[in-house]
Amino acid sequence: MGQQEKVATSLAGAVSEGISASLVSVDEELARRYPGDPGTRQPVHTVYVPGEAFDAGTIRSWGDQALAMLDEHAPDAASLAAALGLPEALADDVHARVRAKLEREPVEDLRVDFEDGYGGKDEDTDAARAARLISEAYANGTAAPCMGIRMKCMEAAVRDRGIRTTDVFLSGLMEHGGLPEGLVLTLPKVTYPEQVGAFVRLLEAFEKAHGLEAGRLGFEIQIETSQAILAADGTATVARMIGAAEGRATGLHYGTFDYSACLGVSAAHQASDHPAADHAKAIMQVAAAGTGVRVSDGSTNVLPVGPTEQVHDAWRLHYGLTRRALARAYYQGWDMHPGHLPTRYAAVFAFYREGFRQAAARLSAYANQAGGDVMDEPATAKALSSYLLRGIDCGALDTDEVARLTGLTRADLDGFAAPRRGDLTATAP
View (cartoon, rainbow, N blue to C red):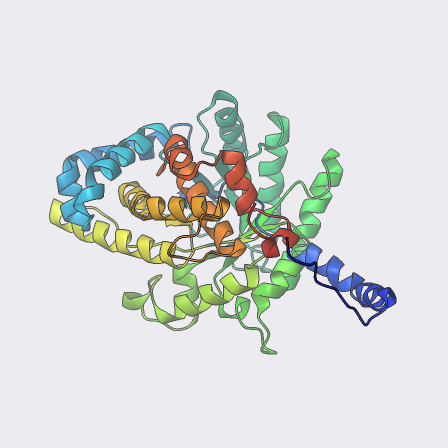
């Protein structure tokens, strides 16, 4: 061994201590505002069903309708590949996994809608029924992983109705066994942070009334107005909304058509790939980064109905929009029709299957300090493991094949995907 290098310093320990003391409040705020991703499963989509139409068979019905459309318009791997432009090497696997998904878990997240999509005449009854049916679904194992309602917004004209529907629904859940783990609430048409704060006060009151743990109820914020992106004073309103949620915000959902209309985009050009949509979602993404709040893309209103040629046109559009969103790190979107499920899953599965071998090899090399043709950093290892975990959670990848290629367990992947803040600058194990 060579001679040990002499280490010299010039500063007293008090200097470091003083600097640390001066940054205590910053450290605390950093930990509070930017806790990182929660590490829980994020659904690949949200399905919206009108409150008056939702029933105990809705999820299975969507799956059966989607399977019937797949059988009619793309009965085998070759026909699906031809319709969507799937790579031949992926076609068999993707087609088989789409069928299996539609049979096993056709809907990952379902929102019973009491806002724009609601056309019922007795909202109290419909909200109470939704609570009962969702409770029963979780009890008997037929629920989607995530379920809940979208109530009316906090604007004056509908505020009381939205508050009452939220109360009726949540009270119904309590009457039928309590709040399920997969419960999700969506607050639409938010324009001011104060509206978010008002909804927080509503949830606090409900928690106190039922002796629930403070903070038990979280919610998504739907971004559908220009003011939600840019306030009158030029600040990014959506960032202030996350703060106003006091840790309860779980997601930011882009509302394609309301937002486009708010900016004056003509109906023919209202789509999730419009430049106005890209701008809004980019602001949402930056505002949410590191906070644990997830961003969801919106929907397409082009439905896959009619003859096969027309269905394939709609499928190609939806497939392309979904792939585009995934590449931009919008891992969730809305699906408005059972016919969107085959292309949702085809796009998601193709996205993960075409890249997982390279991602697994890079993560394995990083974990084993084996080098390779790409020099990855801890933050990239986090992205690689998150990519693999998302693929496993939705059914695009199998745990065994990922373990075989990476040499890592699920716990190992979780550790890379959600490191402690200080670990991001540490060396690989």
